[in-house]
Amino acid sequence: MGDDELMARVSGARRKIVGTKQTLKSLEKGEAVMVLLARDADEKVTGPVASLAGNRGVEIAYLETMSVLGKLCGIKVKAAAAAIIEF
Image 1: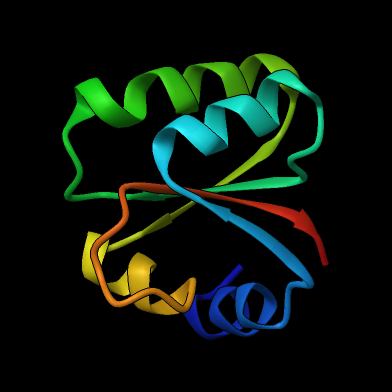
Image 2 (image 1 turned 45 degrees about the horizontal axis):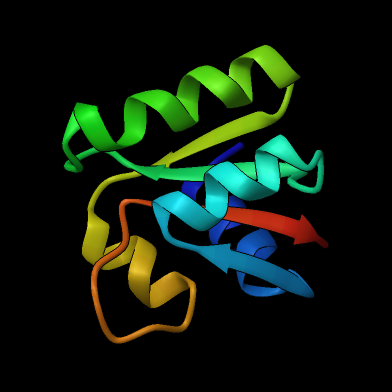
């Protein structure tokens, strides 16, 4: 999936969760259908999310920066992780 296609898909998502803790919770509950991670985020923060998503078979998409991920999710601050609950 190209960057433009990913951006369009995420922008049009009906339900998103933003933040590492909330993303982990959505994965544990089986709600997340896609996980978004920022490449420039600390591995200590994103590692557990990537691991759980991989174990659950949830698609993982990487964005270049935390700023881009935050903006894409409609918040004014940076974000290391987010999850799509419903497209």
